[in-house]
Length: 387
Image 1 (spheres, rainbow, N blue to C red):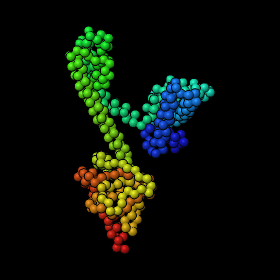
Image 2: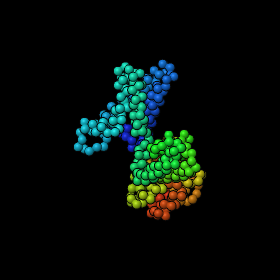
Image 3: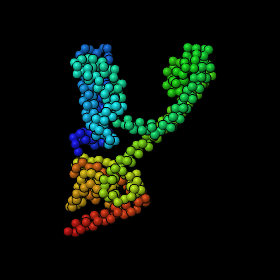
Image 4: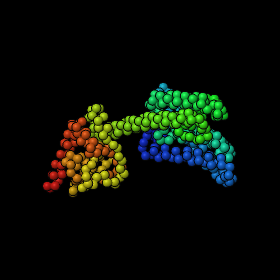
């Protein structure tokens, strides 16, 4: 792998390794610092020195954005694209993409800073602060999740938006009929009445526009109830959408981890789907105790990466990726008989006791294979104990 590919791997948003996560955190932190410095620079009561400091921080952040833009332009050919594109075409393709355009505009204040006009850099950044917010949105974790949820739920959200519009314009029209004579400055036209309708329908209630007639106030109460219903419906749609998307992403992530465990290599796709639904991932640092002898057996573990030391009495066994442990306490329904400590940073898949027995009913062959391994280990322990 080339150096350019290595750097792209760090910036790849789908990479969840520790180095990539730290880099994303740093990017978000720098962006937030830049936005705060720009905002502080607009305070009129700031002293000259404080304003100069804000301008300096703004210039540093903009310079970092410039360096990031050039770096992303350099490794743009590593981004998956049609094989017919040349290196120059791949870079142009990224530069003209929405992300490339936002990154380009976000670092424009750095040009003023580079020319020696630090104060001008801060003032320029204030113009582009919205672009910095957009840049933050493109790099902040979870934004892609929100976008996908909105895309997946677009039909339901469109229906809610249509319902909102119907209630909004209907209430504004009726309020215009009822209140136009007594309050022409607020309800003299339907567009004027829309402000009251929006405030009431969203249950914000600023109180600057209030119906005076009894029928108008009754209309206001009805509109409030409709607003609560519409907002509750919207919240339910978004909550279900987020839950479905998080479940889908977790399923894909666990599926990828299951593929790394040799024990599941001969299991069919249907069986793997049942397994993935029961597993949860968990990471451990080196030297951390995973299982302690004598504690209740509440889960078994499949080792995706790393190594662990299993201590059973006087016998020590080292397990590597692809192995599993902790199953004997579940099969025998007894306390743990071994201590398990990580030798290196480890990623595991955890199957808790309730899901273990549920999986036993769905995939008896898989549990039988686990029992065979458990019997082998038990025989090895007995042999070790008699020596």
